[in-house]
Length: 124
Image (tube, rainbow, N blue to C red):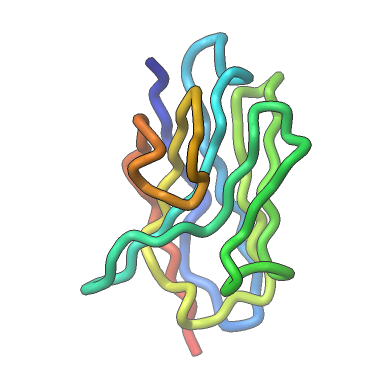
C-alpha cells in the first residue's frame, strides 16, 4: 500500500497561482498511477487531473485544461498540481489519489488510495 499526504493549499486571489504537492510513502511510487480530485461544499468529488506511472500521459478535466498542470517526480515520490489563473469556482478540498491499475482515470472508483485533502480557496 501507499500513504499520501497533500500540501500547498491556501487562500489566493482570482488569477493567482498555487502548487499542490502530494508526497507518497514507500519505494514503489513509480508503479502507481496518480490523480487529483476536488470536492466543494455540497458537491460530489470530481476529477481534476491524472498522470500515468511513466509520466508520459496526462489527462485533465475540461474545466481546468490549459490552467492546471500535473507532473510527477518519481525520485522524490511526489506528484504536483500546478494551478494557474485560479477562479473562485476552483475553491474546494483537493485530494491526491493513487492506484496500481487504472481503467478509467477520471473515476473515483479507479483509485484505491487517497490523501487527507488540502483546502484551496480562491477569492473574487
